[in-house]
Length: 189
Image (cartoon, rainbow, N blue to C red; front, side):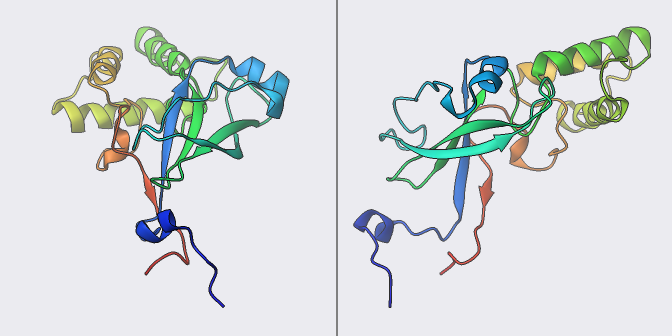
């Protein structure tokens, strides 16, 4: 027996998967950890994709470097374009647990002292440093071997995440679109 579908779902099936959009909001991560699911999230007035109303759509766990435990991040669903949006603190890039400012300070510290910061894990700092060098070469076309902290600022000003590993895909940009498309099993036609 087939499950009935609403007319909106019948018009636009999930054949391409579900698009996850990250919406930055100005919140404090420490307040988020303190209140948990009871944190009062600001609800965006409209869907960034189709400008329709959004519905609350539960929570998802997220990790932040300043917190020992994961916190609940709010999700929203658009019934018109079938997008699932995730709210995220505005000081963080998508898929990064460290804040933008913390990454910037680590790069500047490495540039000035030629040493890693002792308060951050070295493997994470090495990863940022290598990714920044690769992104600088790929996006800017030349090496900023002498001053990677200037390259960081230049890439950030261009709207690129300077320490991402997505150098060959469209997921490396900060702004509106492109967003990552994730195919879900069982929804293909």
